[in-house]
Structures are given as structure tokens and as C-alpha cells.
Amino acid sequence: MSMDTSLIFHIAAFGLILIGSAGIVLSTHLVRIIFGIALLEAGANLLLLLATYREGSSAPIIVDGHMPALMADPVPQALVLTAIVIGFGMIAFLIVLALRALKDLGDDRVDAGEEQ
Image: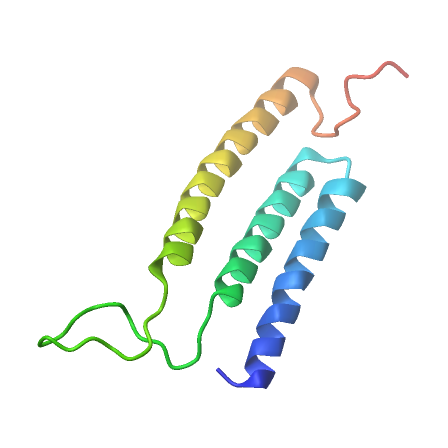
């Protein structure tokens, strides 16, 4: 990955984190907050993968008794895969929670239950 590509990916990761954080903080609708959480999670996962990337590395697999000179670390990849699965479960739970709030309160706004 060249320097330009790496810079674009880092900017994209920080952009996802920024947009997700703004969506969480500035929105009053539950669905938009859930989308903000999903964007924040995607940005964090991308940033973790970018932080552990090494140019020219290969999979840590021994082929014909020869080990690659530069091997990629599989632990961050496993952590990101675990974070994706946990994030999917959390997003599914939040969607069900938002649908229940919409059914009970009649609105998906965060301040819908407050007395005017």
C-alpha cells in the first residue's frame, strides 16, 4: 500500500469516526443514533486494522517447510472480526429496542416521552 493509499484510508477511518460521533451527539432520532454508532464502529475497526498493517507481509502460514520473511500479525485481525460480530449483535439489539420504543411511544425521538 502506497503512502497516498494509506493516507486516504486513515482519513476515511477518522472521517467515519467523526461522522458517527456527530450522529450520536447531534441527533434526537433513535435510528440516526444507531446509524451513528454503526459508523463509529466501522471507523474504529478500520483504524485498528490500519494501525497494524505492515507493507509486504504475508499470512503466517508455513508452506513446504519455509516461513515467510515478514508475517502479518493475526491477533488484530481476530480482534476486529470479534468486534464486527459483537457490533452486529449490538446493532440488532438497538434496532429492536428502537422499534419497541416506536411502538410504545409512537415516535422514535429520544425526548418523545417527556411532558411538554
